[in-house]
Length: 121
Length: 121
DNA sequence: TAGCCCCAGTATCTAACGGATACCAGAATC
DNA sequence: GATTCTGGTATCCGTTAGATACTGGGGCTA
Image 1: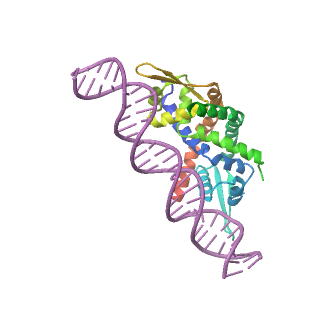
Image 2: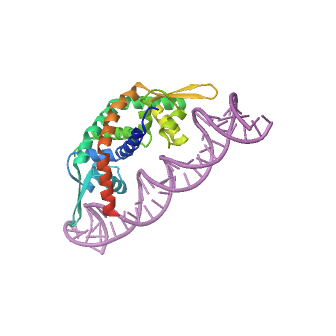
Image 3: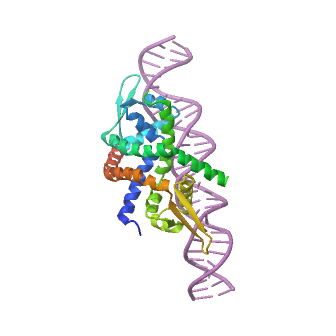
């Protein structure tokens, strides 16, 4: 036995959090919000190929987890600002560390994939 | 515009890698393999509630990305060892950093979720 | 010798999810 | 009066996650 039960429980919790961080859009949204508060369609335009539904879903998830605040201004047309919370800003460092690893090694991973697919294909 | 096109492309690549790291089982598998090489059903028992198919899928993905090696011993019964590659071992540090953040803040996230669900529900 | 287990998977099926498209209200603009 | 901008929701569909059942060869057991 390499891990205690307590560690395993912690692993599940960590895995749960990483599932949020690792989904397709979350990192992109957090990266953009690192620059400061941003409106819904502003984010949408910056990310480019995200649908309204997925941006809504992603932002709701981040809001639910306390990583982002949502501020509605009841103007016409409506204005909704999204901004990283303190917790969200604390997340930037470890995410950037992992992102740095990814940037450094993306070539090795792509090579490995090409090799694997070639060998199997 | 906060990010250049080159940065956006890098973000996509990073997001791609994070999707792999962030899926439900990958981190757990990598954590267990950090202890050394391990057999299929050994991993299965340690993780506990993972199905055979998902463990196979997860390990294939890690193998494809060059993070894990798969060694088959043609014995009866068959024996298959999985082991982190150098690239896989390099991944441990940033993953542990993020996992550390998750462990530190899991309570804050769960509190935020309870608050959010309570307010909406 | 029929029935069970172990091993590392594959095959099949379904529930959930991602994502595209269409629609909403209300004011301004053309 | 039609279109645009705002930040969404509703609906549909194809893909995927994940559970369940099965494979096959050897060994144990009753």
